[in-house]
Length: 361
Image 1 (cartoon, one colour):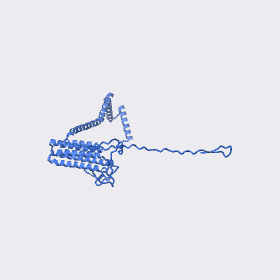
Image 2 (cartoon, one colour):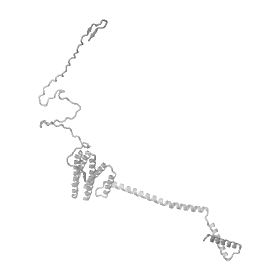
Image 3 (cartoon, rainbow, N blue to C red):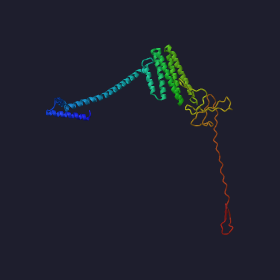
Image 4 (spheres, helix red, strand yellow):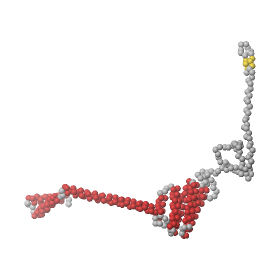
């Protein structure tokens, strides 16, 4: 409805209300008066039923409190979830630490042996130095040999021996490969010697255990000892090539770098190059039966053997040699120095009177 229609309707209602007040309205106006009375009653009822100021404040506070609770509920749920997750992680770590502690003495074939191996792998992952990592591999391999010894005492099943020997060979190959690579790059004859001694010791331990192991596992013991023999041969070959220009062939196998073959051309700049001892060789004209003179060790003082410093000790069971008198030291006589006498002075009388005489000399 537009503005003119609304204005006309309001004007008509105003005329009807004026006629109703004057008492000159039509019957239709009675219905309009009833409507007005109803509206007035509703207004009075609304004004009387409105809450007072205290009630309105209480309702307002309750609504605000419920809204705050609704906003805080997700935060509390988030904190609760985070607390539960942290508790779960702490529980897992605690159980993992206890499990690792219990698996310390686990043997191949035990349920906790896999957890023990996982702990060793984690220790290797946290080791960043290649030399320390190689030492850990060899340490784990030595632990497998000790576990195999315990298996023979407990008469364990054959599968446990297979597991222990397989893990021993795995750690052995990894440790030897890393250690020989370091020696090839940085040198270290002492490391190769220590590795060779270690391999020989582990081979002896396995040899003692193989007699008490099940017959089905003895072939595995033999294979492990053959691998240790290869390690000893590898360390010997690499040690002999450390002073050469060409140390390896450039290829590798299950034990690391393969030593080169052929003639060794010495590298004087190699850290493992040792200076050979100086030996004097006899001249080519000397007879073959004459021994070559040996170089005497250096001493702090030089003794002159041409002139004896005291009486010679007689040889055992023989006649003492005659005592030769030491000749007295010869003294050099220095002839006296002669001086030429000066010529005599010659005096010539003056040629011209009044002048001094002339003296020559």
